[in-house]
Every structure is written in C-alpha cells, then in structure tokens.
Length: 504
Image 1 (cartoon, one colour):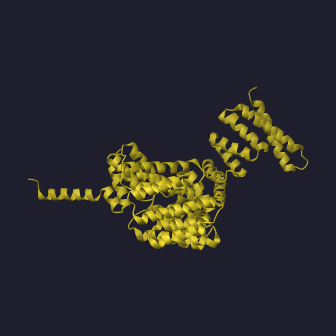
Image 2: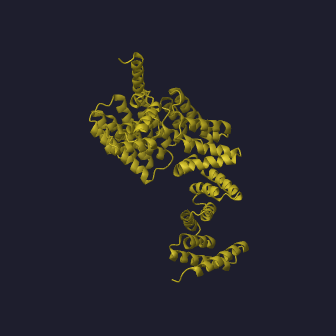
Image 3: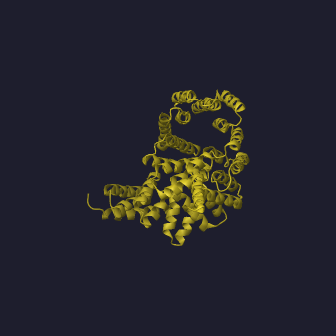
C-alpha cells in the first residue's frame, strides 16, 4: 500500500502543475506568470510547439511585440499552426507596424511587410476558426493602416456576420470613419473633421468604456493639429487602457513642445497611475508608462526622479533596455557622470541601433545626444581608448550621418581600429557630402588602396579628383591661406598615393 503522505504529496504536486499551466495563467489575465510557466516548459523541451506558441502569446499580452513575433514564428515552424497562434502573430505584426508609425517610420518597406503579414496571418486564423470574429477585426485594422478601405469594409462585414458584439461593431465603424478622414488630411481636406469627431463622440457616449474609440478620437485631433484636445482624449483612453505603447509614443513627442509639455506629462502620469493600479507584484506591463514619465521628468531636468523611474522600468521589464538606457545615459551625462553615460549609451545602441536613432529623433534630442557622444569619444581618444571612441562615434554617426565632422571622425577611427569596411562606408558618405574636399577624397581612396585592396580604378579616380580640387583651391585668390595649406597637403598625399598604384 502506498503511504498516505506520499499520496498527499503527489496530489499537491499535481495541483501545483495545474495551477502553474501557462494557458491557465493567460486565461486569468496573468501573462507574467504565464511567461514563466512556458519558459520552464521550454527548458525541458526547447522545441515544444505548444509551449512556444504559449510563450509568444504571453509576450504579446505583456506588450513585447517583437519577442511575440519572433516566438510565434518559431512556434509555427515547430508545427503549432492553431488559429490562436496565427491571430497572435497578426496582432504582433500590426502593433509593431503601429509602433513604427508612432515614431515617424512610416515610409519604409518593413512597415509594408508588417502590415501585409498582419492581414495575411489574421486571414489564415479566420480560415482555421470559421466562427471566430476576432481575426476579421485584425484584418480590418491592418487594411485600414494600408489604406485599403474596400477590404476593410468587407472584413468588418464578415466580423459582424460572425457575431461580433454590437459595441465592437460600433468601434470598428468608428475606426473606419477615423481612417477615412485621416486619408483626407493627407490630401489636404479637412471638411469632414467635425462630422468624424461628432460620430466618434456619439460612439463614446454609447460605449464610454471603449479605450479604442478614445484613442481614435485622440488620433483624429492629432491629425488636425488640435493638440490639447488630442491629449485630453488620450488621457481618457489611458485611464481605461494604459498599456498601448504606440499611443504612449505619440504623447512622448509632445514633451518637446514647451506649451504642451505639462499636459503631455499629466497624460503620461495618468497612464502610469492606471497601469500600476491595474496589476500587482512584478508584472512588467506598467514599465513602459513609467519609462514615459521618466522622459517627462528628464525633459523637466528632474534628473534624480527620471533616473529612478528609468531603473524601475528596466527592472520591471528587461525588454526596455533600449528605451531606459537612453534615458539613463542622458541623465548621467547631464550630471557629469560620464563613464555611466558612455556605458548606457553603448548598451542602448547595441540593443537596437536603428531603434535608438528613431526614438531620439522622435523625442527631438538626436542632435543633443550626438553632441554628448562626440564629447565622450574625444575623452576616450585622449585616454587612448580608440575602440571605445569608435563605438561612441558609431552612435553619433547614426544620429547625424550628414554632419561632415562626425562622418570624418568616425571614418578615421574605424580606419585606425581595423574596421575598414565601416571606414569606407563613412568616407563614401563623406565625399557625397563634400565632393570637392581634396583631403576627404584622398582619405577615401586610401581605404580602397591600402586597406580593402579593391576597386583600384575608383581609388585612382578619387586621387585624380583630389588633385584637381586642390589645384582649384590653390589657384583661387579668395581662398584663405590656412585652407590653401590644407589643400596643398592633401594634393601632396594624393599625388604620392597615386604613384603607388599599379599601372592602368
């Protein structure tokens, strides 16, 4: 006979496993617990398609759209092809696209691919779940972002046919009205603004708990330059749904306008307050709103408070390395903690170089941050830390690729630290910016000749151009003597280097 104590222990163990099932946690609205449960399952079997799909859905619920997208694609590749996985992937792609739009990245191929994938995955989910209206809601939203109003109307009708509840139907109709008017804004027409606003307000009166309608109302005001009204609408939305990152990103841009900064800060604080009241424990979802409030404090030069918020947000959500490290770096630089600033800026750009550049331009701080990076790079050069200087200037070059000084300094440091391909890329940009500068032409050619050892015909033409440009400067009586001396030096170098090239 099995001892009673062992039976009791086994029963308790089974109950723990049941309570620890990731999908149960998702149903209970505890995505952080779900993520932990699925990660534990994947430690035992890294290719478990069910656990991969669950982890992707947990990341989606936590707002980590890039992680959700990557993990759900892995689940599909592993054989998990259920409708919920494809619907989750569609939503992740749609939210990634909206995040790019929010920070001004609306004109590249990746945005179009994300929106097309969102629509395609949602349609596949709809085919696998013939009674579920939700996939068609995602199709509607993806089509609206693509400007495909005919397809959006058809998808909305299909969602309604499948039994989408009346409030959700009205919300979809409100989105259709907003996007139609937004297209007219792009065409220069504002005639339907009042009608669209009144329509959205009527829908909100009918469904005051709809965050989506309030978000669209804010977007409508924003599109027509009604800034204060936009912030008021978004603030009302955040009280109901404080985790919408693209909407929070839109509000961040208002911080750089002095007349709107206080209202923007209040809007972000409302989101952070609502987010922290919504969840308990170490749930990471409030972290993004806390980061945004940290940015508001940073703009107001409340540096200690900003630093505290950035650290709290990063501790809560380890996916926010990019955002919080940028904020921590700027706060550290402003308090002359230069080593910490360098560390955090390098960490941010290493996490996502393009994302860091986009966010800083969105915040309006790209030029200021570039100046800080250049200063830290100059300090590193004095300490003979060329690799450190190059890494910092790589970030500055990403922020200001059209600044000849940044471009030249970065190109030189790449050359000196063995990054010859990167050096050529920077020199190529430099001679686009200043095609008549003999020094830049010579240095660019030198990379091809002595370091990359290729394209020698191009190197020859660059040396010849350098000599021609130098001769023009030397023969111009209006050119200052100092500039003539620089031109003469570049001409001498170009002539010597040209002689070292093999015969034609």
